Image (tube, rainbow, N blue to C red; front, side):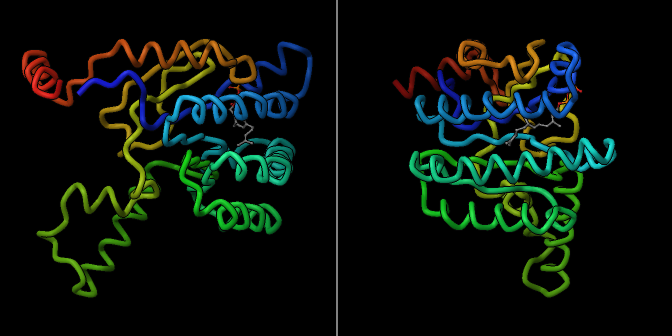
Length: 246
Ligand code: FPP
């Protein structure tokens, strides 16, 4: 039951603002510097054959940031997506977005839709970018969708179990993250994938996101490899299961 490599990694990329301020720059400079570690984690996931990666790029709460910071982030998303999509496609990466799209600007929405369309058949890495995403809102939307099915007699209340509920969430067709990484020193989930993180191994590092490099990612993978994941079982039960599997 223990695996040396996670199948799905979820990351809260925190610390861009502090990184920029420490260099006398604007917060937007930190976000710009955060693009290179995004590229790195994608490359490393492909290299390690990790099948899924979910990045928290912009939370539903981030709309409360100063307007110029929000605008510069949105421009950065469009720019990065347009610059990187061909290379992502060439590498076999399937790109998808989770979160509420309505409030995003038209050009960004168009780039998101075309990236999803271009890469839809790729299977090497499933990359989910959470944009205007909130874990509670994800759960509420799933509940609403399922309630509608009950109203229409397509589903009975008794049929509503954990797999059915999980499948109605934004990551319904992706396995739960095995490893959660948060950079920037805070030890919080911050309304990220609340349902999906139930059994995920949590890894926190003080490193600010723009400084998160390949050796830092490797350290997180090593931390994960050293964990024994029990899913509620005893250590003895796990040993017996591992012995049976080998
Ligand atoms: C949190 O750091 C980071 C964000 C709100 C934005 C994340 C965006 C990127 C890494 C840019 C590239 C992303 C993609 C998908 C192309 P913070 O600003 O809260 O940092 P602080 O805690 O130091 O203030």
